[in-house]
Length: 364
Image: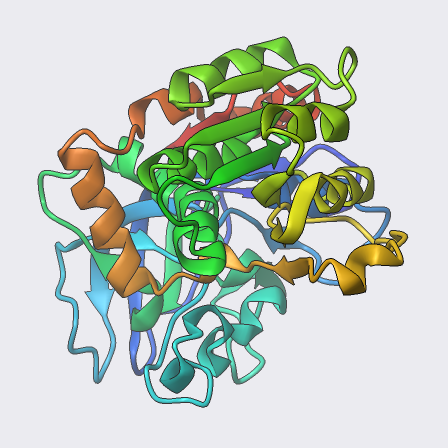
């Protein structure tokens, strides 16, 4: 198959046409990928100083059509249109039974680039190729457990729907599932890439009374305003913490979200929340975060929590988000600012490095 292949960190990806793909095994499906987004998490892997899971086909925001089904597959048939999600849910493990689907034991191999049995469905010249984030969506085909493929309506445009796979699940889910923002609450969002503006959309869906946003890139601040932000701040001109407290009548925001994975922004979020307020870390960070925790954190009962894929159950939330899109409550089209043929993957990555646009979608 054709694929964008990461062979060495901090180097351009190679566009190759000789990746070999296994037939789907028991409980697996073979999906022909038509579109896949470029997520900042992918860029983080490309740009990290060194990695052991190489060579690798990245991409985890993919949509396509089922080409083959393996033995025991019951949810899908050949020809089904599907969205792929990095985290499947079994529905029965310790975490699923406690309504924590993003922590399901079946999905925890997504960081290994391998199946649960330690194998990969991809190879090249007899050597193993890792399947990034359990999907490998920057390849023409993906072999996944059927739990990672969510059936969608036949008339759903795959070039639009693919952004639900990560950006929307993560950002909107962070608001509705992880933080559980209630109507009338005040919200701060720092970092306005694809994840950040999805958080803004989630806050709008939750009917937050004030959605304060911050990003140094003017274009992204404009995007956020169009998606529903009520107060748009340039961190080069404003003290974000002071301004957020001022805009909430000296109280501080109820909920703050970091969409960039930056320790300074997380610290600002903690400082900008009111007593009893909650900060949710959503953006993927590179390396170790070191942040001072203020002494008053305890007595003010502030909360700091992580968020993995918006605490989503793909089989519940992907149809829900697509239904919201169909009724006009969720804007997917405006999320996609650039489209590239798969052979131009490095153009899209370079654009993301300079914060150009929101979501870049690759097309096969």
